[in-house]
Image (cartoon, rainbow, N blue to C red):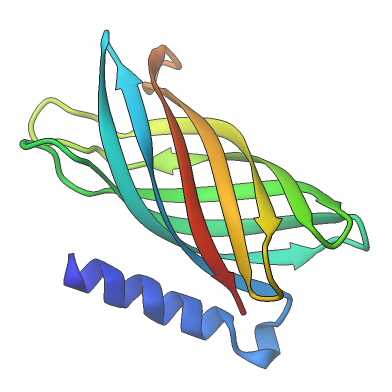
Length: 155
């Protein structure tokens, strides 16, 4: 886990350099995932970078590491794109899509995901976030859902 945290921190630091400047961010989050009739708690971290597309829109990328908080699971890594609208200076509303690696060993495949969320500024550098994701198997069959909430910092 320490290697994952260092990799995400290095990615965020590189994205925050002025030559790449629009808005880099890092966040910690927690929530619930439900699948196949069961549900579990989930916790994770993410680092991303958003590019301005004018005064009212943006697009970005995100790398994440999330863990279902039960034994027998491993960290799932997410590679996500997002696009959305800036709602004044206070919030961003966005849609997401990407791929998440397998959260278990053996007969467990990674999943494609689609979702939506909102970031709400509570200071010039701090924001609250909430997001919903729906997961699909490679055949686009239903695999599960997750809802998370967290806190992040912008650079």
